[in-house]
Length: 73
Image (cartoon, rainbow, N blue to C red; front, side):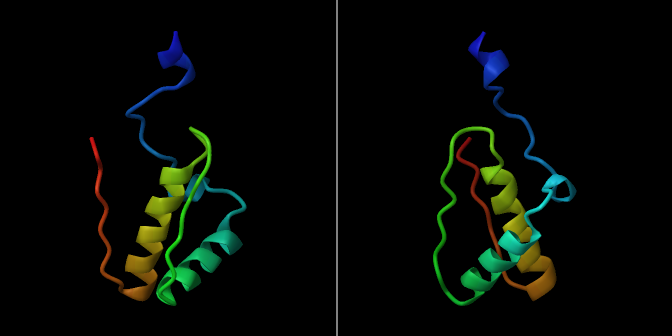
């Protein structure tokens, strides 16, 4: 029953489905490029992983930054 409420191992939302977050994402990219660390807190299933993956994509594609991700699973 809990698996129905909190599915695991599902793919994060694709970047094109992150609606209304463009200004937020530009701000995060600017902060990271300036050397600041960021934290993305929040409850389950609100898109934290999708935001993090979109950040990495933007840094790599738009700013030619070297990026990496670690999946603990």
